[in-house]
Amino acid sequence: MSDAVLDMYNALEDIGFTQNQIDEMDIVYHLKRLARRKEASKEKPSKNAAASDKPLYIETSIR
Image (cartoon, rainbow, N blue to C red):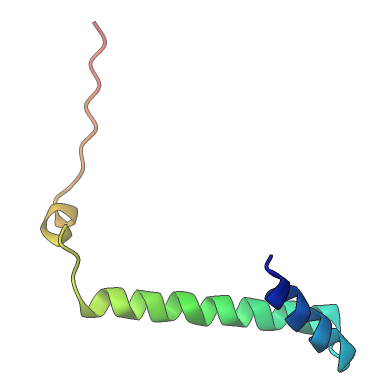
């Protein structure tokens, strides 16, 4: 982790947050970030959208 992140965590502990509270904030932040990424990916289709719509078949041949 970068020094800035560690300083932020130390500051949160200094003002009275418990480690559980800090962990909960981390989880909420990451879930919101994932949701924003998912929404952003819905808004603009990827260049491989047509390829991803086709079923994927895995063929194996043992000779």
